[in-house]
Amino acid sequence: MAQTRIHAWSIVIAAILAVLILTPACARSARDTTGFAVTRDLRADVPFEEAWQAVKAALREQKLEIYTRDKRGTFVAYGDPYRLLFVQPHRVKYTIDLTPAGDRETAIHIEAVRQVYGVTLLTEPGWHDRKLKDERATQRLADAILAKINGNQETQAAGGTVPPVEESRDASGS
Image (cartoon, rainbow, N blue to C red; front, side, top):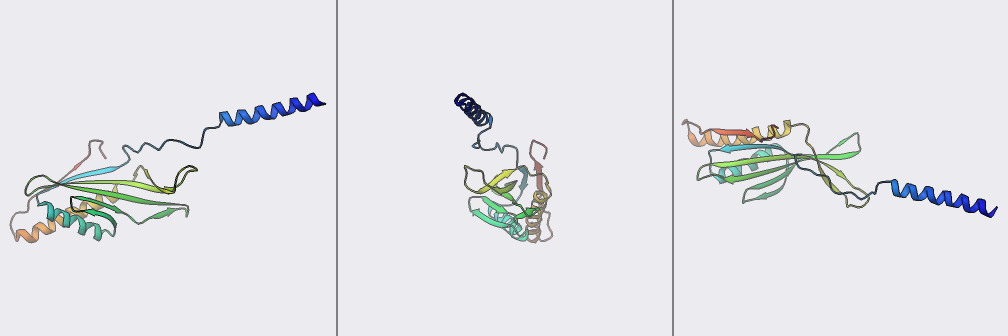
């Protein structure tokens, strides 16, 4: 009878060890988020200060929450959070970088990424980047910025020719 107990316990211990060894660990490295963002590049024939004001006004018109606005040329804004099936909050994060490309020219880089709010067993709760599937929100923001810049140029030109605003997409074709 003692040998039967020892044999039964050794089977139980072997099964527990097999489960512990073969089960993947809960801790994992952070997800690689390269290529998750949708980008748009704009080039406007307006001074940096005027482009900065136009971007700020466009973000407010789109009712985006401006989280950071840096006079050196960076905006971080968030769309309204929403839930899918009442479960996990989602939002879109926009990063807009303005770079002077001369005295009267400004390069505008728009980057958008979808974020989900979540937590794993070994991390703090927070927003995590995911691939943005729908590019319409990014296009609407780019169109609003272009409209603001062109509207400002038209009021300043007073019937003259309006300098062009060029738009280009990133190399990945998005």
